[in-house]
Length: 137
View 1 (tube, helix red, strand yellow):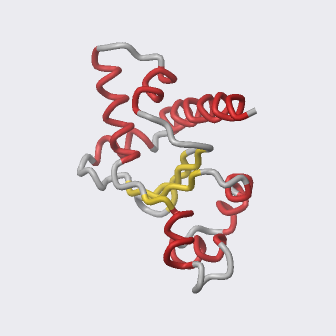
View 2 (tube, one colour):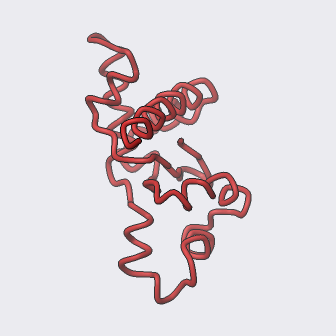
């Protein structure tokens, strides 16, 4: 699940790591411009992604009483978003933080956060999460 917040920041919540190949398979694109675009989107989302759970446990757990406080104070993630991701926090899911424009492509960041593309991407990640959950059981 991608949750945009702030000017160009986003959270990415997944119950496991997704490879580019798995992402493309879930995207159901094969060749051409559509595949190139989805590859660029994947790269944009994953490049420079900070694993917030690792960062908290490695560096900030002495300073903050829990990961929610860390997310609120360090990354300015508001309480509404924290409530939305509470299940992800409790499930030890991957909690990633990124900047949409870290790769320098402003247009791609705008596309990712458009209502339609955000819906498509969240469906892809939801499908991955469902399959990943089934594989664990």
